Image (tube, rainbow, N blue to C red):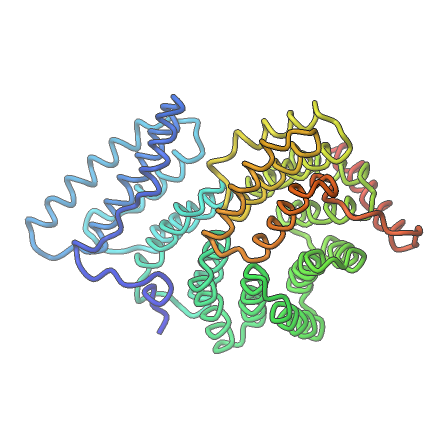
Length: 431
């Protein structure tokens, strides 16, 4: 029941093993950019993955075992020659050190692989992270317990969702929810349900997403699970924002910010909170929040998103120099972007260029964003971009001013959020 095939599909024979193109593609890109050290790391990851393929299909034939051991020694030599100061080198060395010469799987192997998968996700290498996670699950094989399986399923669901692989993400999240329920583990069960809501939101089915978020939030509150409450409030904030409910979005994100202890997750929520502040006209405070995130140790995708929002913010206030500065920061990370983030980048770049009067260039980037949204079935983005193109062609208003008019009035709620963010920013600067 708790099999890796349920999450990652079947590998039926030696001719059907994973080919790990993602690592080879990274090596190719790094070679083109004359970054030899990064290219060597990518190739190192590739040869390690291929060795694991052989291990997972290892037979008892003496000739086969002999070839496997020869390959193991060759991979060990290769990994030992990788750039010693690179964190990825340490991860690869840990994985290789846990690969058994006798073919007998040990927990240290899949634990090292899981750690490496988290590292790759943090570095925005989502395809590679998913492949390494699959190898970890296959290495653990029939030793996967229910709680471990639920954790694999949540991780795989998140990666597939970020890669806009909606069916695979839904399958993984449902597996996490079902498995966790079978062993009475409420946190993973509710996270799986919330993940399914995130998939609905990504596909533009807001009512279905709202129903699932509400049930998770209600049950997490009843069970006293602040971690899940924080996640549910954060997702509610994203959904409210997409529906144009600006004050509700801001309040939900602030509640999530208050409930969340994990510093990395807090940076992600702070980015969403800053986005909400922009939408009510508090751009100065939003800039502080985004700059904290952009210069933090948060995941690469979170930092890129903050830089994207700063690029858009500076365009909206007419600061061409700052717009170009943040555009250059984002441009350096193009290869690390998820599909939805790539769409967002081209959309915001088109909107910014239009704001500065470069209509023809803006049309090119809007068209690119539209094509990418259609390719990845990002329906919510598709309609938003079509509207921007229509506004641009009619010249009815400047599409870069993608900011609603400020919410009238100055409520106690807004003052509380703004003051809390300023206090957090001041404390962060002192650390």
